[in-house]
Image (cartoon, rainbow, N blue to C red; front, side, top):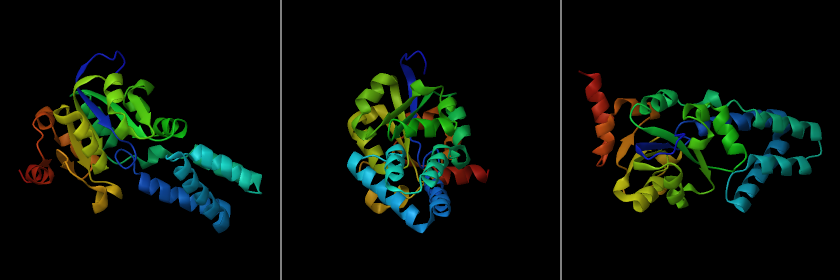
Amino acid sequence: MTDKQTAHIVFLFDVDNTLLDNDRSKADMQAKLLDLLGEDGAKRFWELYEEVRKELDVVSYPETLERFARNWEDKEVARKAADLIDNWPYKEYLYPGSLPALEYLTTIGEIGILSDGDGDYQPRKIANAGLTEAVGGPADVLIYTHKETCFEDVMKRLPGRHYVLVEDKEKLLASAKEFMGDKVTTVWVKQGHYAHDPEAYRKPDPDIVLEKIGDLCELDKNDFNNHFNKDFTSKRRDKGTT
C-alpha cells in the first residue's frame, strides 16, 4: 500500500519457505561454498554463521562474512565468498505459484511482506527475488528480528480491517491468533522443514491449511472471511474431478 489508508483485507506473506524455497537455496549455497572454500573453509564459515546467529539472535550474512574475512588467511577467497552470497540468485528459488498467488490476491485486498531477518541482507534478498516489486515497493516490506513480537507495529504500518497471515511456521501463526484474535485469518502453507516438525506446532490451530503456496489461487474472498479450520486438500481434489 502506498497511501496507507485502511484496507478491507491485508495479506501478509512470510518469505523463507513460504514464497521462497530457502531450504533448497541454503543447500545449494552450502555446496557452492564447499567448492570455493574447501572443507575447512566451509566448515569455518558455517561455524561463524551459527556463532553470529546465537549472539545476535538472528541470521546475519553480512556479519558472518565480515568475521570470516578477518579469520581466513586467503583474503581473495573470502572476497569471492562474499560476492557469491551477496549476488545469490534468489529469484531462481521462488516456489512455483508464488508470484501468481501475489498477483491474484491483489484482486482481493492489499498485499505485503512480513519477514524475520537482519536489516541489511534480508531486504536485499527479498528485492533480488523480485518480491519487493511484486508487493508494490519497500514500504510494503516489513522486517523484524522477531516478528511475532511486533504485530501491533505491523497493524499500524499496514492498516487493515482484517488480516490474512501466510506462513510456513505454525507456531508464529498461533502467536498471531493469540494477539489479533478474529482480526486475523491464519494460513499454514506446509512447505519447508518447519512445516513437518511436530515440535514446531502448537495451538491454536491454523484457520486454513494448504500444501503449497500456489493453492491460494483456488480460494476466494469468502474463504478468508469464513475461515474456521479449513483444510483445502479435499476441496482441490473435488475441483479436479468435476
